[in-house]
Image 1 (cartoon, rainbow, N blue to C red):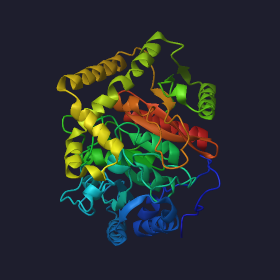
Image 2: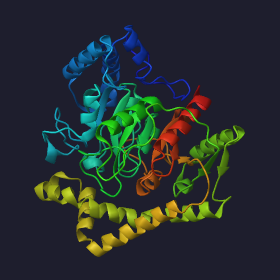
Image 3: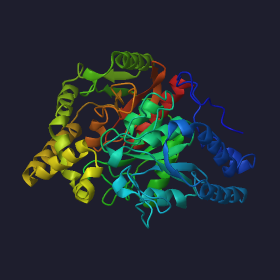
Length: 458
């Protein structure tokens, strides 16, 4: 039976929208009233109805997915599933290497590019019995010409980027999980636009091996899902199988997220507040008042001088981040430019060549500024359970513009974990709240997010 969701919902309500939960189906697998194959077929029914207009996928292999789902079904029948994600259909942003599919990065220069090895997270998911269905769209080379993908709640609007297809596939209830990546706001922003839960983990906490076209100082894997449980258990499966990036301790926490009410949260304006749309500001302020009614203390820059000092430090990000990114993307960007400059959009070439003109000393200046910001974060004295802010300053743009990354920059620059939670709506479209924390607070933030989802949506 197909998942009962309209092809294009008339409006968005975070309390009633039904996305594609996986963990809720697992008890049926275990008792024999449902199977991973039947679950996959329900996903495929939604894909058949929605993908022609959403355009979230670059490529799919339905028959291979069915075979993997059948194998998972047999494991459940035998009472021996490999993991909590056994049988979970998922898709992968076409910025990660996979053995099954080309990795083309939405560039004609990489048409048909194949790899012999899976990315680390794909290996981990397969080992846990999950079912890879295909690869999802992204802008040209991750940051150029936007993908053709549309927003699942309004086809005239953008799903955001750069994890365009991953966010849209989950927001359209096609899949329970899709993998993305974040250099700046490439997970948090599209999650807000498409009504997903998303985790941008602590830098290095979830193995990013196989991620192409990245800035080594801050790019990470990211996970889109319909709910916190599926999102966390996906991250947990990957980290428990292949760990974090080399030199990093990996993801901390437990396998199951238990809800936990926060005592105190620090409100962050960042540079995004000044440019946030008025309706978004109003919805955020209303939400903070709801938290205060639940006896959650909100501390802002107006309440504590150390928060104000940190806000001032965050305001330095535009002074160094664009230059840092331009330097670090030179390889492989300049190799592709040399291969076919006329096949890359001009503004991307300009960015690549800006990095080419930089000196090593200029790059060192950006690293010093980045270290200074991270030092300011580490020295913040307020005792709190985390930070709360927005995930985007605008609603999804009409057309294909991917949106502003201003609310994504802090977590990326700070190596910090961040969750985007689809708790709000504005003008009948999703609007995400961002929870941000100190390094390795991924699990604790997930607990707070779970409390918020239960308290305000159910």
